[in-house]
Amino acid sequence: MLDLSDAHRLARGKVRDVFARPGRPDQLLKTLRGTKRIAYARRRGVRAWIKRRAGLGPYRYLLKEYRCYLRVAHRAERLDRPIPIAEFGSVVRTDRGLAQVAVRVPDAQGALAPTLRDLMRAGRDDAVPLGPLNAFVRDLYDLNVVVPDLTAGNVVLDASVSGGRFLLVDGYGEKAFVPLRTWFPAINARALGRGFARIAAGSPLRWNGTARRFEAQ
Image (cartoon, rainbow, N blue to C red; front, side):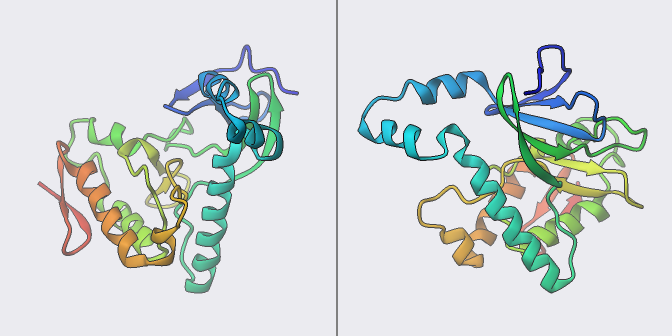
């Protein structure tokens, strides 16, 4: 079991914390927030008891992410397209519960990659490379990636490839009991458009919903 008491926390989200993996500078560990684990354990009722005993516990969200990643990777292979989701793998035990192992996406200097939100807040007209960003947009549409929580904070710029590429690091996977967005790409396309419009609102970019692309203001 990994001890993360002295590990450097790199990011904190609503659901998970992100740590550098001790001894593995090329990897990250995503752990479920302690408050979320406690809240899950305190749920009342027979249904909650059955889920704790027979289900995946508070880690069910991982199954949704794995399913989404596999489905997208399979479609990307058939269409000969890149996978627009940052690589991740197994889970390991830590003193903060199970942690998902993820590849550390770097910036040009080798530090942690900036999010799209960071780039938008940089205050420079050229801070957000539109070519890679719109390539990422096309991949999400063409591969029908379901992203219920599409925000600028869940997208990062990977500088390890020539010209850079944007990748999803969180917020993906079908949440609905009936996966309409997975079954019907047109429904998912409308949801993606609304998500990109929200990202553009208040930013130095404009979302062109007809052309499905970001443009400079």
